[in-house]
Amino acid sequence: MSLPITAVSAVSPTSFLGATAPLGGSDPTSGAGFASVLGSIESLQGLQSTSSSLAVKAVTGDLDDVHDYTIAAAEASTALELTAAVRNKAVEAFTEIMRMQA
Image 1: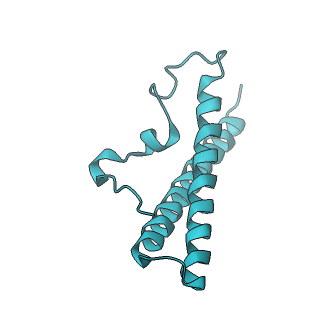
Image 2 (image 1 turned 90 degrees about the horizontal axis):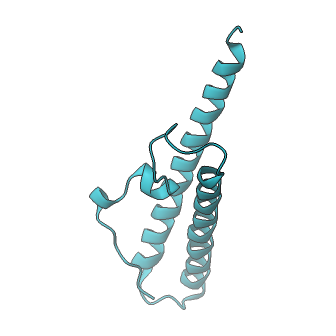
């Protein structure tokens, strides 16, 4: 099982999160932005499950190329770090908005 390798220049936070428009530029009533975020969470879960299954195969000796696991684990780790960073920024923004006086 060989994983495709994506060029680093082709990967960006907006491509991972599925953003199609700049922040604030989408229709807030459509809910498409929230749906794309949920899709990115499912993508993250997929990366983590792929990494976990490859780890089990590596430990049991069923994996032909250990590099496949290494790449999958790095992708899952990077995606998790990106998701956590975006979540932290969203929480910071929400906290800042709640501090504003009306």
